[in-house]
Length: 257
Image 1 (cartoon, one colour):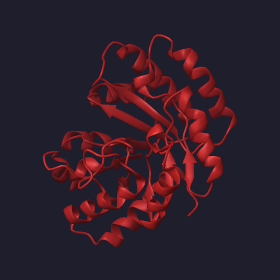
Image 2 (tube, rainbow, N blue to C red):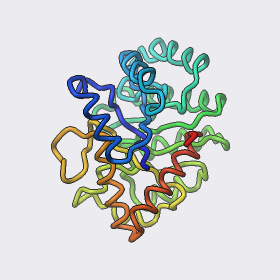
Image 3 (tube, rainbow, N blue to C red):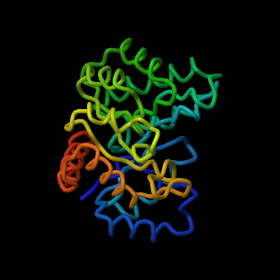
Image 4 (tube, rainbow, N blue to C red):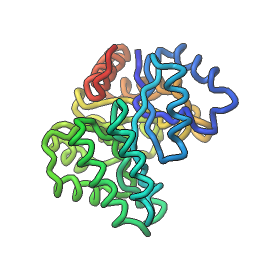
């Protein structure tokens, strides 16, 4: 079995064929799909499919860095209320994104810090979005120094120095997705330095589809191509990759399998 630890199957890209997408995931041994929240607009969509398919989907709750602006605190207030009142498997997707816009860097750092501290208080793992922002994210994590905090660097595309830094936190995992299959990503060499017990798989559907679907809509069934690439790069049988990544995901997110 496989676990897609990061997928936005509630997105509008799936509104016309969601059940077919879900069937294909099951046919490809995807047993569970974890859903990160984006902002207030995505909550009802995410919660709806979790309620309809409770054995398959598990929701997270958080405020995405690309949704951070001058008004982020008012956006976050109802999200914090939900986190305190309802069970979620993680606080996410959170982090810092400097790829699209650096205008709200300070607001992003503040929102990231607030959400990290809340996750630590609630004993929830965090799902970190890091795009062109490892330095800033490490700065916040080092400043807070939350020893018991755990989580994953979603869609990890860092280098060896980032692997070493993340390993120094001891409780953080690496989310590997379709980028691994891209010829010039450089991620294959880095993957060999990631501890096997800190490796989990994801798709980030509908984004970042693996080869041979690059340029098309991504979906959870395609995680098998990520697993196959991991197997190839590490020279470990595919079945073993399935077992260890499923075990890792279950441990990080406290999933009952």
